[in-house]
Image 1: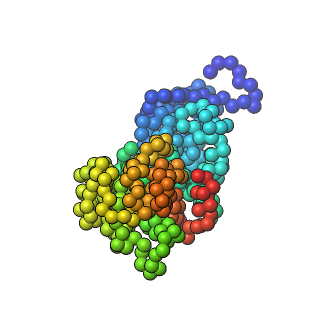
Image 2: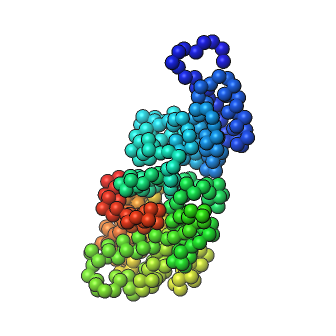
Image 3: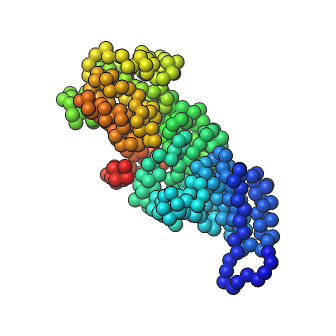
Length: 402
């Protein structure tokens, strides 16, 4: 570096890699090269091809002896922008408003401060988050961060865009990565990745909550089934005459669309309540597999269009069909919905899906996925913290933000 630096100025020397994130050794070498230029502050920005790439940047931040800005660009690198203060990063960047980002997947300054509480993040902050693909639509960070703040917990909750669950969990194996929500498409793989699985989650065959114990062991739970089934039961009780001591699902024909993690949870929960469960799925083999597990018939979605053996059936969509941005999609035609008295949709973005809108027009009782989301999140909060969930606060947050 030639020329005299003005007094009271700090010199930032930066390197940007728009292709990938080099190895830890290559990053350390790059750091040394930048320091040798006389930089007061080193800035290294790389690009994530998978979320585990970010761990190498965290490694550099932790061991660096000079002020360093270390960020990893794009969706899979998002956590680097929020968690950098935990690992010793000098600063992060936020755009002034959405749509004005200066780099891919840059959060707004308002979200960094208000959602992620970044000014309070430090070395002792525990990290929680939602593992999924896609994950950008999730309201979980807004919900859990505000709930953590309300009980004074030094913790942050972030979105983890994960391709390979086992690789993610083994890479981020520090006790500080203390717990995870698990969503599409990783709920079934999570059963295999956990060291211990709650018996109900094992019976369901899906985990939506992972806790890392102090000894490093991963324990899996499922809060989906209670959240969804209780939401459907309460929706029926609020609009239809029911017997007070018996579940309103008992004896009813209960059609589950989807054979993934959420489908398994709904099928298990409905069967436990005495419903007669039918599984419908795009892929018949998957529907048949789950049908055999819970002792119910299996259908393709095409067959479901003409399936109406009786009136007053219950329908539960557990797939991502109709989720933002594909809001005009629906798993079942309006004509076919006429046979259902109750329709539940696990999708909650948008709040009123096409499926729910058309079901309501057909006269059905509709139950929003928001109810399942709120209730399963309360169960997760209790697993994460060991404290009772702030019920009214969490409900208020979700209803306010959607």
